[in-house]
Length: 270
Ligand code: BT5
Image 1: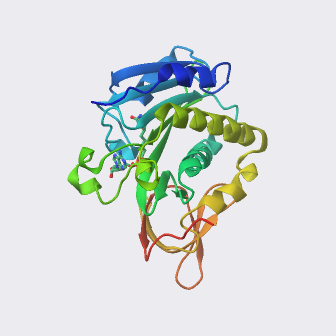
Image 2: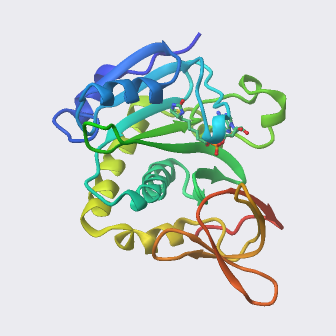
């Protein structure tokens, strides 16, 4: 058994806000992102948020599964309708990474971002982000931002192969458990702040903070970007949000998205 997320408390904390002012809450759902997408298709406004206690078909990038056991974590998706050029959409994942890391760092100061879409503590994934875009023929572009955060997750609630790679944020706190409504309220608050900065100033307004939260600065990485393997030293994000990698021989290359393997450990966030 578990304690249900206190949705009344969360709604009260977010009342009147642009992001999270309307929250649809489900006990069980296939995927909060599928639900948010369906709401967006029928005209739901920016900031509309979907949260579930449990997902039966939670998804990550490239059709991967997001493990979503009930009652311990946060599964949240929200609708964004940015009035920005389409090529800036991938930067929304980066902006959301800042917001998620900020929220996580309120409980665990060493949380940082693993490019492009993970938040880690001590090398373990505590959160994953998924931004999916759609451009209907008869309307403006929208983005569904999905965020999964492991909060009070116990290792035995994950499949064996993930137990060494993932953890709940609470495992790194002294208290042992995190109030999920409080976490969600803070996360939505941070998203509103970071997204506002992004819409007004572009990724340039967030670039320095992103780099300061990155766990990869100076790390030896190998990145599978779907077509090639890039190996070298990660040197932070360029102004457009691509990752700079210095390859052997000093040649710099830029990577737009991919899966990163780190050799020799992550770099601490100051
Ligand atoms: C992600 O994908 O990290 C994006 C995850 C987004 C999940 C949220 S939950 C709310 C919303 N609704 C959805 O249906 N999705 C979003 P990716 O980088 O592809 O990482 C996926 C990989 O992370 C999997 O292949 C596993 O290795 C690992 N993984 C799966 N479940 C995990 C969990 N609960 N905690 C940590 N790692 C997990």
